[in-house]
Amino acid sequence: MSAAIGVDIGGTKIAAGLVADDGSILDAANAPTPASADDIARVVVDLVEQLDGEHEIDGVGIGAAGFVDADRATIRFAPNIEWRDAPLAAQVRELLDVPVIVENDANVAAWGEYRFGAGEDVDDLLLVTVGTGIGGGIVHGGQLFRGSYGFAAEIGHMRVVPDGILCGCGQHGCWEQYASGRALVREARRHVSEADRAAAPLAEKVEGDIERITGPMVTELAQAGDELCIALFAEVGRWLGEGIATLSAILDPSVIAFGGGVAAAGDLLLVPATSAFEEHLTAREYRTPATLRLAKLGNDAGLIGAADLVRSEPV
Image (cartoon, rainbow, N blue to C red; front, side):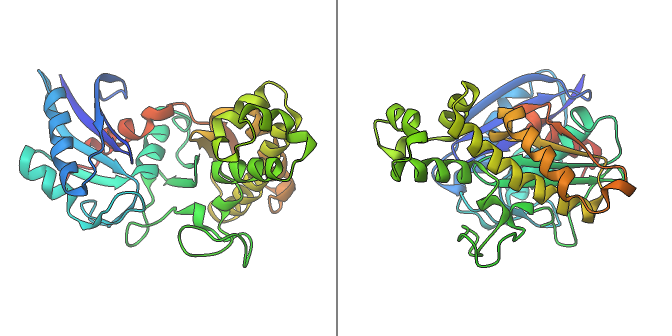
């Protein structure tokens, strides 16, 4: 039985999975992300060797958070790992002698959702991953859209507030500063620091130490009915809905799927996002709007998509 191996490289963990052609994960392994970027290829190879077993391996697909060149081999820049023009595909291929591709992590997650998850019934998909920041992936006409140089779909850095909050990318007013886990936590901490009465349950939970406030904590309180935390999700959802309305005016997708840690809050995010999307979508009364869905594959979307991509587009 043949299979491909998908690898998802994160800032703290590298996850790998042996993936069948129906998207099912046959086996999985993981390891801590090494401190040195130079050691990552060796860890990837070790994980692949743990998983290949009795299977004939079609190839290795790697998803990584960063700007991946059009050659699907070189990571030009990564924000959380010290990759600068890193020839990761060549490094892994030299040690394994199998087809290897490298792709942006949100792109492979979008491909996984398109093939086996929220977009499996359509020919196009916009995936919006809502975590600490915002990532995105675009599938159009059954093809992953990567742009001329491989850097397409960095949707979190669409500027929505001129001269707004400073973003880690160096620009001001990026979408992810208002519609992400970072925004959720920032606003929660602000309410506690200002001694807002509505923030009393949150302040009590962290004993007044705002640095202990996290996205999952805000989610937990919101799900328990805390009015302030519900309102914070509503504000993030509003920004999210306005942003996808703008993207829909450009891309006109059939389905917009939401993934990432913050999206796990479900209707807390999806309901206000849908309301804002419907309010701000251009010419809504004359068009069929995109269907908004939660992503289905969870944390496995990246490695499933990476494995399927190397099988679909071998090098």
